[in-house]
Every structure is written in structure tokens, then in C-alpha cells.
Amino acid sequence: MKHSNMRIALVTVAMLVFLVSTVGAQAASESKAGAGKVVVKAMAYGDNSNQEGVNWVRIVDSFEKANPGIDIDYEMLYDEAYHQKVVARLAAGDVPDFAYMGADARWGAPWKEAGQQFDHRDFINWNYFDKSLIPPMGPNGEIYEIPLGTSNITTVLFMNEKLLKSLGLSAPKTYEDLVVMVPVARAKGIDVVGIDGADGWAWGSCLMSTIIARISGDPNWVSKAVAGEKKFTDKAFVDSLAFLQKMVKDGVISSKSVLVDYGANISNYSNGKALFMVQGQWAAGGIENPEIANNTVMMAWPKLPGEPAHLSGSVAAAIQVGYGLTKKGAADATVRDAALKFIEYFYSEPETTQRLRDGAIVAPVLKDYQVPTDLPSIVKQKVALAQRAPNTDVIDAFLSGNANDALNTGMQKIVSGQSTPAQIATLVESLVKR
Image 1 (tube, one colour):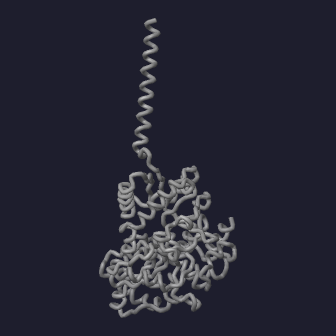
Image 2 (tube, one colour):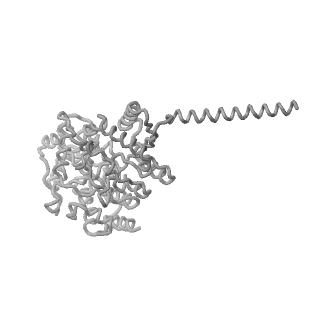
Image 3 (tube, one colour):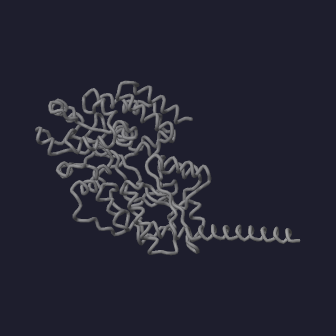
């Protein structure tokens, strides 16, 4: 009887310990999420070592203090790690309520393939965001995310005007004008046009997107090719790839550029080692030397051989990425409204709107936004270029996956003499058909 009572006592103690630990774990979990709070799961873009990530963390903290009933539960990643995690989470069914996304092949395709694109049109506060600055993203005018800024120009030619003048040169009006600069620049150990050729995407986004539009005479050639209306083996595209060979042969771009990464490209330009730099508009904020930044002209590529008049001065531009709801997040009205409240808050903060100042965006999409009068000259030029230049397709906004990878790697091989334009065109077309 005594042993029986003892066993009962031991069982009772064990049950109490189990209950206490369970309740404790549950309480800890509730405390962490915030009991009674609306928990919104997000995928953010940035990391603790860059300004984008630092700004995100500060803005989330500020928002949660101002809105104690909402908890932004986020995962933050940057660059390729972000894209890889998006694919992994969607494949596992671990869908966030809102995320950093776009409407193109790189930033939008995973969400589209997972059936998680959500049309925001009926839920965006149009008294706060400017409807005229947010382009349609779907076949029926759908808006799948709220862009951080107006259309993103990817094919800017940055010109060091002061350096050109010191060499007795002036702004080029035609491609042939660039060729004339080659011996003058070489005599000083300077490149004519610098590009971060070690980054495959730079060849497509920042250069070929302009070349194919100009040479074909069709601003939407790429999207038509992806849709099957054109072929990447067509003469227009092979000729566009061959133009890369011509630029190397003419000395306008060095074959050694395939060894130059993004940071080195901007550094070379910032230190007067190149007359021009080709990159996207976002690179304006990365020019380290204030004197060179203040003497930089942001321009479209000069007239290319054989281009039609209607595409003179054109630039490739894509819809800017931003934050958007997923279908999963929009399914719960409470979560949806909390997420939209945060997105509106995020877009209004100085760290976000002043990405205009550091060159990350062209201009915010906020209604009645007043552009600061004290913007650096180079940033004002960016806005002016966006206002006047005709837009064409950006390649990787439509071409994705293995086909886009093959094109980017292929252009590096063409420049370094390892492949021919016809070989790369055939490979890309075969991958598009798969």
C-alpha cells in the first residue's frame, strides 16, 4: 500500500512537471509572438551589413512601437540567398504573408508559378499612392506589388564629362564617336566604356537590352521572342550579339572586362579609369569620388549603326521591385490590412523615400511627393532621363531560368572569344523551347 501510494505520488509529480513545462513553453511562445497580436509573416530584402537591411530593422521596430497590436515576423536575406530561399519556401508551402517581389521573370516568376500573385488594385490606398506611377503588371491590368519607385532604368551610360574635356573630347552622338575616342583614351591608360563583365546579368540587363531593341527596331523584341513571336536565332538577335564582338574589336569595350565585378567597375569609373560606365540607374549613388559624381552626365547610348529614328535615345527599363501581399496573406482580412498598413508606413519613412537620393530608385510612387530641391546633380539627371527617354524591354524581365543564364554566360564567352554569336543564339533558342 505504501509503495502504491508512492507510485501515485511520483506519477502525480511527473504530470505536474509536464503540465508546467508545457504551459511554460506555450507562454514563452505567446510572449515571443505577442499574445493577442496580429502576426504578419514577411520576407525582407537586405542584411545586417548593408543600409537596406539596417533601415528595414529600424522601420519594423518603429512600426511595432507605434502599432503594438501588430507583430512583423520576418526573415531577411540578400542577393542570391534571397532568391534561393523564396523558391525553397514556396516549394515547401511555407508562404509568407508579404514579401519583396516584382512582376518580371526574376522577381515575379516564383510567386506566379506558386499561384501566390495577388491583385492589389482594390486594396491599395490611392489617396496615398499615385496610380499613374504604378504600371499594370498582369494581362488584365493587375498590380502584384507596390513598386518602391517608378520604372527602373537598366541601360544608363555614365559619362565623365570633365575627363572627356580634359582629353579634348566631347559627348558622343553616334557609336562611331566612341570609336574615335579609343586611341586617345588608350594613350592615357584609360578604358572608353567600363562594364562589370564578371557579372553575367550586366551584359543582358545593362547592355544587350538596348542593343537588341535598337538593332531590331522593336522596343518589345525580347518579350515577343519569349512569347514565340520571334526567335533568338533570328538575324536581328544574332547581329546584336555580333555587335559585342565589334565593340571589343573596335576597343570600345575591353575583352578583359569579363574579369571586372560590380564594385570594381564603379571604382574604376570613380577613379577616372574609364571615360564611360555602363550600368543601371542605381549605380549613380555608388560613385565614390564627389568631383567625378558632380561632373557625370547620365545618358542613353548614342546612335548605334542602323538603328531607326524612333528608338534614338531609348533606354531599357523594368517595373521596379517592391513589397507585395501573397494570396495566402491576403486571404485573412486582418493579416492583409495589417500588412498593407506596414507597407504604407514603410514607404513613407525617410530611409525609403531617400533611396532616391542614393540612386536606388528613380522616384517614389507616393501621391503628391515633393522631390527635394537639394538633390545631388547626378540624381536630378536620373529623374530627367527617366522623363524623356523612350523605354524598351529589359531582357531578364522576360527571359528566365536556363535560357537567361545561358545568354549571360554566352555573352561573356563571345567577348572573350570562346563562342560565336550564332552558337549562343542557337543555345538560347533551344532552351526557350523546352
